[in-house]
Length: 287
Image (cartoon, rainbow, N blue to C red; front, side):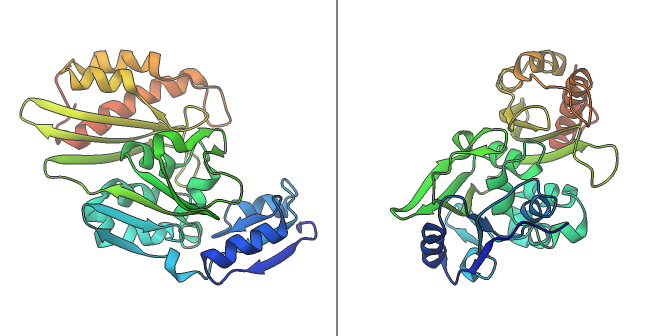
């Protein structure tokens, strides 16, 4: 199928993109990689008045180390996250998550900014932002605004972006010594949406894990920070108690990937596996 007739304009820089967007009106959409948007338009599942193409804005396709922060431009493609030495060193969870996203053809076009702005609750990168305590950088007519990841994802395909506000970058604290990150997901086939997934980060100490962050995806309307399970692990409680705490943290629904009961079970399986990844042991911590 073909999309309904719409206008198209290509922006040369961020300021130009915002001006074109204002001119086109609130029902126009930003086009970056287009891997979700164009599919919806072609199937007539979405209709928009126009497209503002930002894909040629070179300033949004950068990965830079700025002090103790890794700043990643919104047009950085998933494949770039896989290959970047800076990402592998300072935000390894992103390097681990990128190969899990769909298929290579999509990863060569899809962008980190597009994924975050689309806010698919089954996507890997929004959960990475939550687990890594990232900041989302948006720009509107009034300048730049920084939004903590915990405040950015507000519901199913919903974010904290204001009208005519463009996501331009993400800022992630660099991996400090003694801290580890891990990503796991369970899908029926490679490239399918995950039935459940987990991004984890923690300080690995002789006394156990500390400052644990567990961000689940595919088990709610947005990425979920498993606070009760995190508290149990921070307190040095057995893994079994952290698993039990997930019953309070997570409230999944049945979907095409798995039943709610299956998602709850898989969340506990994933917890064991990421703890093993973080600590380099079979079970992560004595049960």
